Image 1: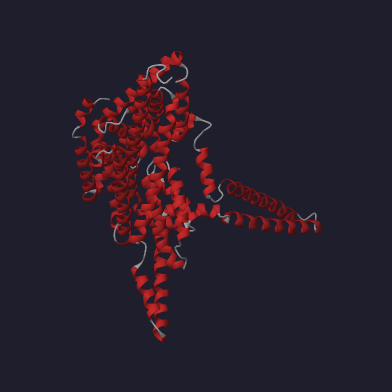
Image 2: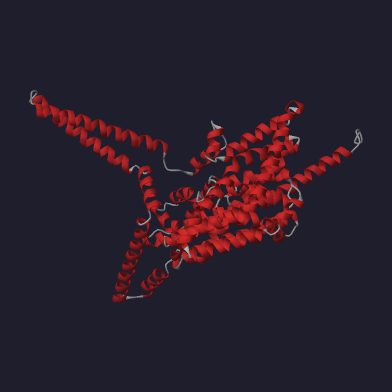
Length: 537
């Protein structure tokens, strides 16, 4: 990849911006037409996703082989992982600060009613308390209505009921009843052994007992495999995510982390085998170059694909009334999340980039804007990975060694935007629920949410709306009802795009920082090579 390769893509960023604006306008003013473009968006997204697995494997191997000595991987690797952890924690802190300052879930009427109760005396106090209780009941009814109206939230409740043993308890009661019926039937059979009707009752009771026992066995098996997730369980799961017993299965399910681990180990092994594996190492390099050429070819149709993706999504949202939903409390919640994500991207990440590289973060953001816009359009870090790599090398001037190693890993475990969103969303839900339930939003609850959101974000897949899956873990950890996820589902499709864009930009900042570390190591190695043999003796 050379600089002249990017010349043909000089105006591509502007075309993509134009495509997004045109798509949003089409989805708003002509939703019935906009939804017809959905198939084009699905094809474009599939083309991007189709490249992810081979590109990740080839680019990581090529990056490790380019290091030459695998021992050089230690320092850049430590910087990359350290950067990911630090920025994720900072993102969560930003999310918590913003949501506590703006308080999007706090009901102003409820706060005023509470103040009225505290200020009132005598008969007026009783009247104020009655009004407060009535308002609480009204808010609770609205929240429950919104949750019940959402099918996904209802499914989450069913799943949570199973995890909490509700179905197991019902199955056990059914089993106890079946056992008592069978005992009565058997007792009657002993008294009248030749009565055909009683014998038939015994057979039916035995069948019912067998069914009840099967139901109990199924629920006990589910409970054993789906027990409530603790922080220890999340850490254990993260460790298991590093490996797989079937690489092809991991590839088919877009489970990138074990593929990255395998690629690092395999390529590191190749670096120790010298000329014996020359053909394999050359093939890996050539394969990587071919895939990146495919990316550049695909970028020629990116504005069309992005228009179809965004138009289809906004058209559906408009027809389903989701755009109308973005008003009042929901609108304030959206604004809170966007402000938090904007602060993390344009203050936290900008400052970190300047601190380590001493270069202009504004220029760097402009160089990476094509990838950020694609991330906004696809809502998938993994799907955007080919574009991010192309922009990092051809526009931002990051070395291929750093890009191939850092970006695939970042697209898998570096989810700053997701972590910020999950922490803020959990507090938003808590602000709505805690005044109704009477529970206090304590510092310990917020710390629990922060830790869980950080770990859950690392475990989130780089696919659209994967954050919703890990959001259930955060809600459980905070002691919040799982059905409360219905309060944010209506607007998640939009916020998912913003947080994915932040994830993508965070990955590219990490690549730029690690690139500086790699260049320092290379310079030190060159200086050592220039020292004459025996000069130090």
